[in-house]
Length: 496
Ligand code: BES
Ligand code: MN
Ligand code: ZN
Image 1 (spheres, helix red, strand yellow):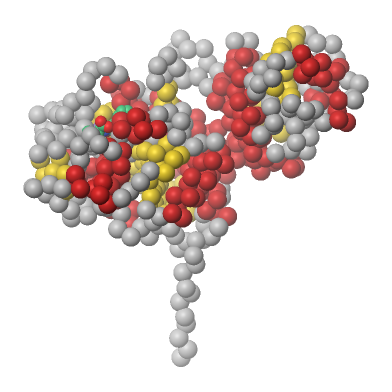
Image 2: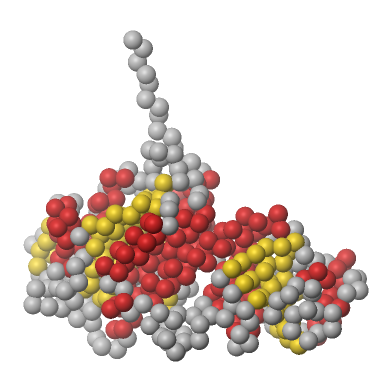
């Protein structure tokens, strides 16, 4: 998909050589505009008077006099807030999907210039036209090729437009990999995708295999992988946009390419959805794809422990005790609580980067789906500052999260008679006890955990990856780039 941004009045947009115009109408048209005599503006004024209220309400016109495009869709954008613009563009783009529109103009010229609204418009048009085709040759590929965003003053919103474009790349990268079935997205495939990102420039990718992971002592990660015929991969990506030595943000993504549950096997219904169990990893890859385009001044490290969780003669068994890279031993009481086992070793590994913040992203618990559904990602952090920054990043870009508790009492159930801890703590507060398990491996790093089990994909008829939380992560990183980490005291030169 191609995007361009132009300064155009409504009258000028009417002359665009495109297949369709999607004109966003705020509840209150600017006075000066309402008086303009051109055909499209007259139509807009009339339509607004006739339409029911409500963001996303539409009327369509065909071969309208004075308008070059064959199709005009006028859609209500309510108070013109970024959220309303997103909803309106999503509805309008979806309505035009069937028409096979290749060139679309999103006309925001009647709205106040708002960089976030432009970013949302770009994102929503991509989201509503996305089609997964990789393993479905019969799928009608996305028709939409070129989107022209018309605004009153392009210079005022250019920054939002650029972030929007990068987010489209990042979100679609994440969706693509999360959507691929397990046999088309093995740990090796994921590592290849990470390497391919590395070749784009600006990103360094390193991939560790079973031998190197064993040498590091990642016994918890290895225990999960041992039941699978697919070799594990540990992916290390580095984007160095900041000064050398600046503490990085470290993102750790759960990369279980298929979760059967292992010996504690899952029931058959909906087990196919466990191909999405690498949604955290996909969001890290997607965020790096966006970083490669935007090139913000900050250092970011991406860590992806990736393997399958399979039942097998060699698979780890309930009751087995393993030694994590941290030295702490773990009694694996339930092999289906595998995400925390691969993440704990990755978190230990993260410490070597002396991160300004480490954030793990994981489709970790069904309990989080019960708690928060598909609306908000579960956000856990002992640091108020980091939790607030992530919460705010999500609020700003509409990729919402909700802070959950981490009281020490929640860790009680993790006690084990045979190891330093068990890997499960019963049914109550399952999302929180999983987070408490991870917390045992973060030492004094500023850490946050995002449980995206409910938000990384949609179930049901429209089954598919959402690309979340790439927008939240990118926003957080951009915010961090704007507020430099506490500078290490300069080493004092001793005078001779
Ligand atoms: N990948 C699942 C979590 C999951 C379940 C995500 C359903 C999305 C939908 C995870 O590995 C898992 O199986 N967790 C168990 C933990 C339990 C055994 C303590 C769960 O949530 O049931
Ligand atoms: Mn599991
Ligand atoms: Zn899992």
